[in-house]
Image 1 (tube, rainbow, N blue to C red):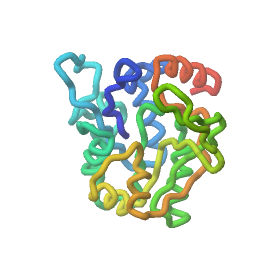
Image 2 (cartoon, one colour; image 1 turned 180 degrees about the vertical axis):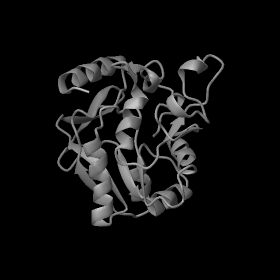
Image 3 (spheres, rainbow, N blue to C red; image 1 turned 90 degrees about the horizontal axis):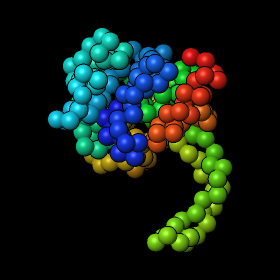
Image 4 (tube, rainbow, N blue to C red; image 1 turned 90 degrees about the vertical axis):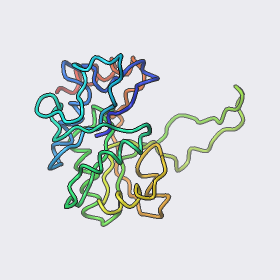
Length: 221
């Protein structure tokens, strides 16, 4: 469970803000628990200006870990943070799921779908995707340079499930990417897709938190 971001675009660490009275990351941990034997929560390193009492810290347990099995400190990039979490996953794990804590509306069904795809189809990874519906433009220096053909384009979400050996091998090679599937793709490994959930938004801006609250109110908790 990757929760080590600084929340620069949001204006703060949104993954620990309350959502319907529960920390955002706790929603994600709860959903992951529906398929996982354990959850490693990867958190940012606390700085001098942080309210340490409001953030899970490495080594936290119980309620202080937001329901996770263990808490570790992440790195300077997303891939570094995933690797920090991988180091705590037991060697006997066969399937590993990576999820961004800032997607609190990913439900148990979506977690189950990606895990099932890896187990049933024998692929190296499985990711949820939704179709791109907006017209896409490539912009250079404030001007439209081209219209991008959206045929065959899909927006990618988390949770993403992987055969443990494949994920570990992809990260052993190093490198960085915006999601773990890209590292497997670079290694020539097979990544399948499952239907994503349009409600599975990523909290990026402050207004996204209000939208998540509204969606929760509409679908229940």
